[in-house]
Amino acid sequence: MFLTTTEKYRIILIALLLAHFIGCATQQQKTPPAAIKKDEWFAKDKAEHFLISFLIGALSYSIAREGEADKDDASIIGFSFTSACGIAKEINDELKNKGWSYKDLAWDLLGGGTAVSISNIFDSATAVNFCSICFSAVLLALR
Image (cartoon, rainbow, N blue to C red; front, side, top):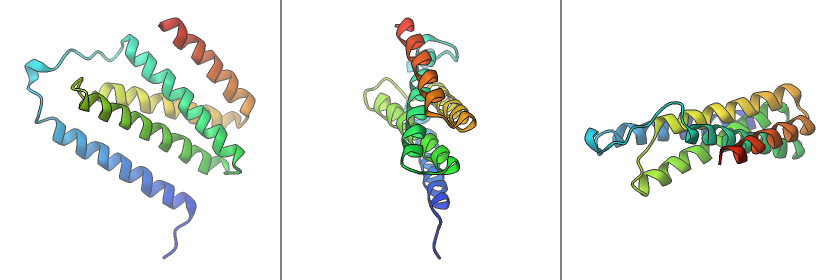
C-alpha cells in the first residue's frame, strides 16, 4: 500500500499528538500538587507562546509554499512543524524541572493554527511576512 504525501503528513501529525498525550498522561503522576506553581491561562508568557508559534507557523508555511508544496500540504507542514516545536519546548521545560504546561502547549497550537489558517487564506508571502513583522513587534513590546 502506497501512501500519498498528505496521508504521510497526517500520520506523522497523529503520531506526534499521540506521543504528546501519552507523555502528558504519564507526567501527571510525578509532580505532587503542592509543588506545581500557578499557571494562568492569560499571562505574559502565554502571549509569547502564541506569537512565537505564529511566527514559526507563518514562516514554515511560506517556506513550504516556496518549495512548491500545494496549499494543503503547506498547511500540514506548517502546523506539524509548529506543533513539534511546541512539544519540544515543553519537553525541555520538563527536563529543566520547570514543569510541563498544557496551557503553554495550547497557546502554541493556537498560534500555529492561526498562522497557518491566515497564510492559507491569503496564500501570499507578502501577507505572511506582514503578519510576522506585526507580531514580532508586539512580542518585542512585551519584553
